[in-house]
Image (tube, rainbow, N blue to C red):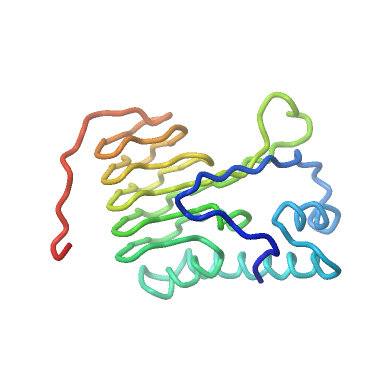
Amino acid sequence: MPPDNEAPSSDQERQVALEYNRVEGLTAELPYLARAHGYTGHFAKFRYFLRVIHNYMCYIIAAKIPSGELKLTLYRSMGAKIGKRVVITSDVHIDPDWSEFVTIEDGVAIGPRAMFISHVRPLTEHTGRVPAYAASVTIKKNAWIGSGVIVIAGVTVGEGAIVAAGAVVTKDVPPYTFVGGVPAKIIREVPPISVKGS
């Protein structure tokens, strides 16, 4: 069930400040989380709870089935925006709590166990040390994300970029670059690719 507020277009960078995590469990935090996701009205908590159940069930199934249209449909039903000709392999983590902040454009290939983390919500003990927020994760067209890559909230991987296996991407990746490491750094530029039929 979609929230009551209108989401910005996929091209628009989105960021939402969040409260720090008090670790009181889902039922205690349900009113806050429902509001943070834009649910209002008498049944807001219930509608948000149904969304949580839906997203986690889709996530569990999608992560384990082979790459294909069913996998993409499940991730899309969670709210992730996924383009055409996208390959997502096994055990890929698209943040089920803020999946509507994840955009994967056309022609992207994603290796096993890659993670797209669209929110950071530290414990209250970390107030003032680390920000608590949800932000867009955008993978531009024809990018290639290697196995075990972690892309952090607020990051855009540029068109045609290649991210080496195991990299942790904490800053935007320029188009047509090859990056790797922890944190990811530019290794070299790569030539633009041509896609047959485009």
